Image 1 (cartoon, rainbow, N blue to C red):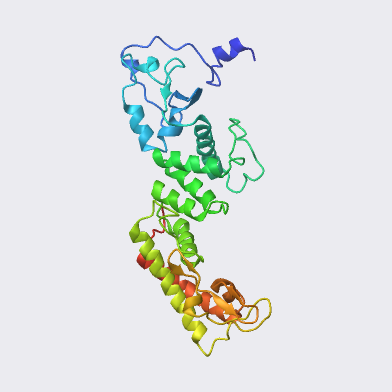
Image 2: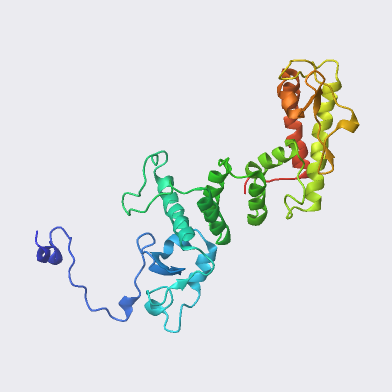
Length: 318
């Protein structure tokens, strides 16, 4: 069928692109389809790069952008306002172009993941639009995505970034806690592993190590550490629990005299002492050398989580 025939249409089939009648004043009041009447493209400038993306992609998921798009875009309005042409892009101040690009990759890919669950493995592009997915994003990229999602209230992108970063073991413990402070992260899945590690690690956390921590937080962590150590020491002194042994000579370990305790940050290290090897062995290392003490430690894990929840409450969902 020729282009002319397509335009003319087939009266029998009722299909074609015939000439529309000259609209009268009344005909301008058309109904807009709720699904297929798309919002226009909007142009942003981020540093020295332009981005041209569907307005709907942003306003659907963010109250911040929904509000922004309702504001006047210029004296002329319409297609001549800000964000409608390359000469008048909307400028995103304080945002890096690579961070914004990575943010858009995650945002555009989330809908694809929702539509095709379990089928994204091995794919690197959206087949229709050629939007790249986010398989190559590193830790710093995901942190930047999380910051932008938080700043602009994109809950779906924020949740995705948090899930990825929760599984990233390369992030230092206190860096992870600092992110929670900066970005108002309160979920137990993010915070509870951090609190457990701070309570169980050999050296107590101090404000010198993390100046942004409050005195109140450090006091609570210190109290939780004391509760854990008390529980372990009670087990060590119990006649029912076999004493830990040295991993080198297999002889019994003893608690050193108070004067021999090694001080660190003003707090004692709760070490065990091997008389045969004449050396100190960390309490956690000693626990792992005693199956009975390991069992006691695991039994205390549930109590520890309850204590953490009492001292440092978290939420089930962020």
